[in-house]
Length: 320
Length: 287
Image 1: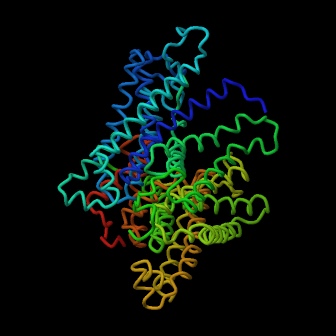
Image 2: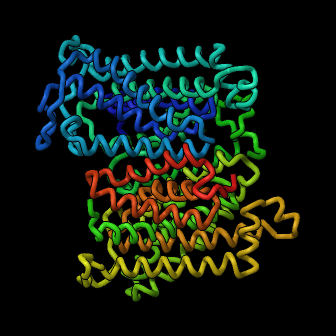
Image 3: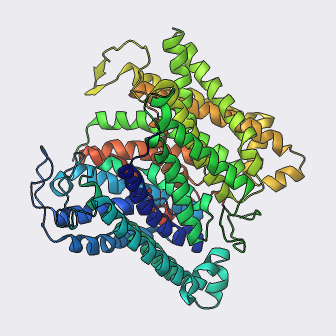
């Protein structure tokens, strides 16, 4: 087994970006108990916002005639991505945040699919089903020769990851987070204390969505070219698997879950191509993730690093 | 503005499909009380079982449909026994997440066994007769006929047999049904069987209408959920009506909006429904 350095760096970058997604999801599900199934949609909105803002018109698709592009500096895209994704989260939240748990799951799932439908069909804005390419990379070509690009980019992703980890943990431990936890345990209690719980849930939803948008921007500027099939709901389910396996309610668990799940998904890159079942490997690893998810829920309901005090509705049994 | 009658016919076809699938989902939900994301993959599995019988074993399509239906029912029972029953004392949301894992497993088993290429049933491609400006394709007629037959049989099952009445009672109030001496544990197995059979039939109909792909059921899931919620979760009649409303709504919308946005119609109806009538069209939702 030959492990090349560049392959390790690519894997680390992907893990880092997924870990940022998992942190946002942990605020929704782990802290607030919201069933968000739209994470791939927030990720997509962030990626496309950043890509459209930083590429010139028409430079993208080959056949599609994209008529909108701004060619702004990358930093503009990275600031705008969380804003538009957060606004999308807010919009989706306003229509559905008052709904009961699993109704919210269905509406958010449908919302994410709608976002993907719009991205696939409005070619004037997004290049449609074709790839939107030539997305600029930050500091490309201006790095000193001794520093490989992927090492630099991993540093950038790690910086954002650590920053968002610290920030979201701070939110969770602040009075704001304590209200979220109270909503998670029993919404009637904070309501009785005069808290506007719908507003708190909306803020939690928008914050997690905005972070997913930032992750989308990091993704777009790393892979140069994006297309709608990168943002299928399967991605949302993988992030769910990360948060549950790592342990809902724990930000450390969310990051650990991202390492485990992405590790399973990427490990086969390091295997030689001619092993038996080589062609089926991508599907086999998704089966492994499915089995792991069910096994963790059965044997360790609070996940590997989960918050044991989290009595949440979801995790301790008992009725509705 | 006059709407092309062809759209309404197409809507009836799609509506029949959603109505049938929605009925199966709502029956399962009524008794088990969790959203089963793997339901779409039961549909796909059933469709592929029928494909294996039809194409591999060269059996006539009618026999293949029956084999697919039995296979789908057996699959749902096995999955329930092996997996879901171990989590029945947990919160519904845990079961929802478990069903995500199950969906991962089933869908990727399909990809490994049958590959990701689109597959087709070996049925003759015929041109349909057309009158009143509507073309009636034979597979469309078959879908509507199948769906009406199954809906009729289910109606009889739910209203005229002891087991069916017990199912409705337990779906309405599980504890009360248990108090009255209904063996709800056994009932769950029966309802998994019936739900799996219906899912498989709906999947086969979907495959007849276009083709088979591993994610066919998952993609169909959103309008089906919309129909179930619109009709009031756990309400069989509501699910059927919801299915037709969404099917016809989707197809007729083509006259007003680009056809690519058809799937959004279900979402919009769903959100309007949830915000205005959270208990479903008839206010009989079990929760």
